Length: 152
Image (cartoon, rainbow, N blue to C red; front, side):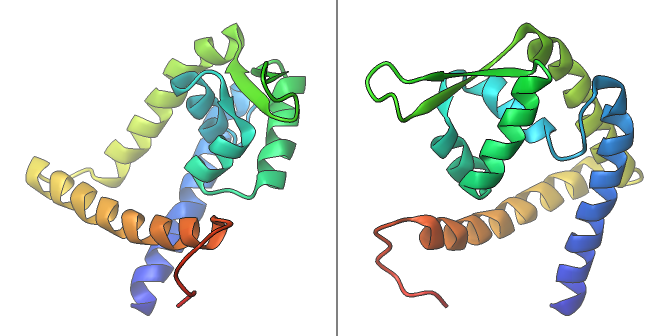
């Protein structure tokens, strides 16, 4: 299991480096793409919903969104019913960046799985989805204010 986590961690760091290099022309770092894709996929999502969806601390989401807003990728507006809630919307700049973001992510996947058969890619995807579901269930349980289970 130690090898499994080491491989996942090192692959994630390499992916961050790759994305940072490829997104430099957009003025983004390797971790900011997730906020743009989330805002484009779900315009009007609240900051809190975004934090839960991408499994990131609310304060980190707030910091990243502030930077993306300053750089013109997103805009935040108070909710019409609850002014304490900020809704996140992509700007035209984000919408224009989205195809490049998607291409960079696809290129990285293709690079990593070069030489894999289609069946191997599908198997890898299915297994990683199962791993993610377990990891996300743990994180969501820890983040939920009314969690019913004890931490493992």
